[in-house]
Length: 537
Image 1: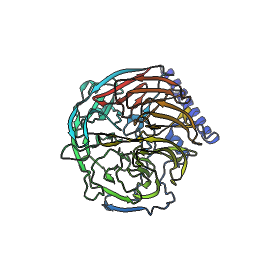
Image 2 (image 1 turned 135 degrees about the horizontal axis):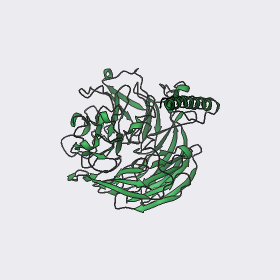
Image 3 (image 1 turned 90 degrees about the horizontal axis):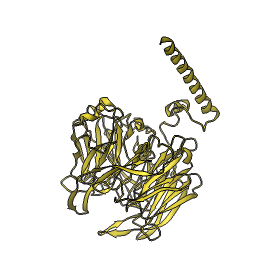
Image 4 (image 1 turned 60 degrees about the horizontal axis):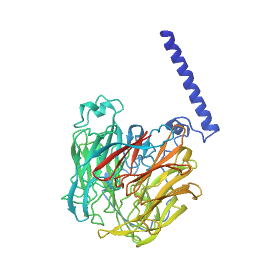
């Protein structure tokens, strides 16, 4: 027995030395081949990818700025948003990381042939009528579920957790906000409630955030006012209690609207919580613990060319830089340490699609943005654009004619509302997007674009439009498959390289929410009362 143990240790050491030696050789001799863990590759790079950025500032004279509570943050405290947003333990924010480009985890089992409905979770239904209609239950735009793989010692601290889950290995929990105002906790495998829901008693349209430090904090943004309060909330999942409320009806804000649809991010190293608001302000708050939430630093701005305020899209971040888009069509880069703008871009129209960051060409950050057709009038141009992340210069532009319509007296926008999806592995040369209400119709169009040239590789005509973001799935050899939906219930699964449609099927759901996946399981919410899970076969 001792002999076998010694042999195992010796062979393990030999393998490790050989693996590291081969990886280091590839790193320097064939830089495009990376076989070592990302943190090791980063060390070999001298940490060059993750470091404070000071890009040359362009003309930002169009900003009329006010800031408040300058003492509440340290402008020299180093902030570094990497591509690891506690990714090994799940999906803690909209699109899975700070770059908004990783909505899935794990691998699927080979080339898929079918999608099977596995479970349905039924939410409450809020039939109250607001100034903006009745919102019901289920989830809407963006409404993405989160999934957390709780370590056992942390799972035991979750308030009200059912005992059956405490002894499970690999316990994964879905966390999703609903249009009924509740936040639900659901078993990833079975679709059953794992613990009691919490509520803000007001519609939640956006995606909630879980603190990546796994300290029990849950961040929730309100979408519509249907009561006395209108703003954002923090819950302590270890006690089951709401511990903080921030009113969006801030007298300092330049817009009197209190919603928080934009998904917030937390820098795990410093504890800074960044939350853009629809009142036109960006809040930066130092969260050291769950007992005292201090006053935030507030970034307050106006741009006269496009004065309509409100940030509904989710911002992207890389190192100490953040990229934001607003309802007026203003896109800008912000230094998240100093909270000063770096560059400005006119994005034509309301910008609700998230700011997506993709590292290319020697780990250089590029930004993908899209715009709605809203303020242009009934008909206008929708664009998917690749932008130099450090300068704000346009690299290429792909566009479609799109329309909007009036629904219950309000504009129902066309254009690009789904977040753009950069391909990876065998699809690393492609980026995917969805145009809604194209060419005067209610139809959508899925498009795959070459990342470098901006040329369209293939398109797929969709039966109806879609605001839900597509997700990418990979098998163990790097083949890419894309899952997406449309607003009238169709689910699509395609080959991400060829564009071949593998599955196209009508369901009884209305899909607005963005899905997530881990391995062969997909979870997504629908309008009405359902959160559902599909299994890819």
